Amino acid sequence: MIPQQTDIVVVGGGPAGSTFALHAAQSGLDVIILEKDRDIGVPVRCGEAVSDAGLRIFHEPDSRWIRSTIDRMRMIAPDETIIEFPLKEIGYILDRRIFDLDLARFAAEAGARVFTKTYVHGLLFRDDFVTGVRGLYLNEPFEVQAKLVIGADGVESRVGRWAGIRTQLKLKDIESGLQKTVSGIDVSSNIFDFYLSTHWAPGGYLWVFPKGKHMANIGLAINGTEAKKGRSARSFLEAFIADKYPQGSVLSTVAGGVPVARTVVPMVTDGLMLVGDAAHTVNPLTGGGIISGMRSGLLAAETASKILIANENPTRDRLNSYSKAWASVGGKNHERLYRLKESIYRFKDDELNAIAHRLSAVPESDLSLFKIFSTALRAKPSLLIDVARLFTGI
Ligand SMILES: Cc1cc2nc3c(=O)[nH]c(=O)nc-3n(C[C@H](O)[C@H](O)[C@H](O)COP(=O)(O)OP(=O)(O)OC[C@H]3O[C@@H](n4cnc5c(N)ncnc54)[C@H](O)[C@@H]3O)c2cc1C
Image (cartoon, rainbow, N blue to C red):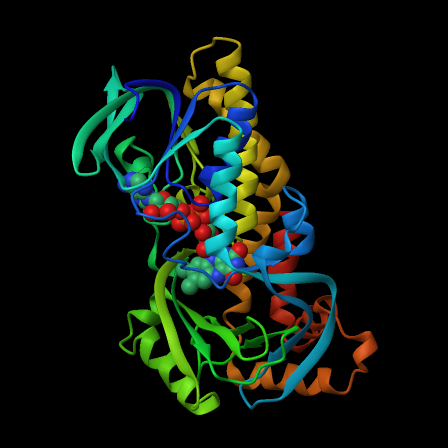
């Protein structure tokens, strides 16, 4: 049974919610996670790519989570010119069904209680202060009073909105992500492929992330403004797979929004904090949100634990230390990446081809993401102005 009272209710059992719950439970607080789906980690709406360095902030990588280890990258220009180079830091394609389940298990082992098939459909308030949640547990109504509520309910977060935080996204700040897991194909198990072209993914990018040698997550993210123009993400992705991997079998298809936006302001209100996609912590340039979501979960747990263990009221002012911690750890970089995204997505196909041609003359040992970026800057001097603005804040 769901308890009627607890210290903290976490709405959502994704990486951000479970990371919050682990650290809050470790500091001795009573924490419950409420997850609407039947199984933690399913469905997987994700390319499942993370960097080794990012993962290690939280956990020693476990071989059960890893489907492929990536040490090379290929950027493919609109005219199919391929720029291939080794990565400075390795990355992984995870199996998020196992990874997310383990993150929730770690939280449970630290003392948090996890309830699945539990749908939260509203908040409880006392004089505008959030004091708990209500919902359906195995289709039965429940209410739980809590000192603090954590909105970890993903990109479509309603928890934030119920509390009066503006979490709505502008069309240009949301990407439509669609991905198919395709098997029976031949892929290099150690290489990320990124296609940048209006032909395959207008205003976005398309990825092929290998899961072993014969299976891959093939997906694309197209900008909301493009998605509105008519042709759907699905038709772009199906055209790509039919062209490049016609022999493949599609084992699963997932769709989801990716918030490529500024972080929500404020990230907190009286009695409530937002973490992960609910707070728009996704890296706006790459669309990667696993590690940044976990990071926000950790920072929120540090602030929440200090306040609740000192028996203080979790007012908006006190909780705001979390927003400040986020701004100093990831926030400044987040803002820069957001502004860079706006510039990079303005490249036209012929400009991308010209950059790829320049880079194809560079020996592989000299290639890196930095080299690609500096070549892009030379190819489009107007981008220099954007970058100068970005770093000087003008
Ligand atoms: C197509 C696609 C590809 C992506 N690829 C990558 C990638 O390769 N690498 C990467 O780092 N990121 C990727 N992302 C982003 C990444 O998936 C998210 O940033 C990450 O899952 C965010 O974690 P989270 O815990 O904030 O939210 P989520 O993982 O979305 O978890 C939120 C949880 O809350 C639950 N929930 C929602 N509402 C309620 C409710 N009312 N009551 C109870 N439970 C509720 C949901 O069921 C869900 O389990 C991708 C996203 C998409 C859509």
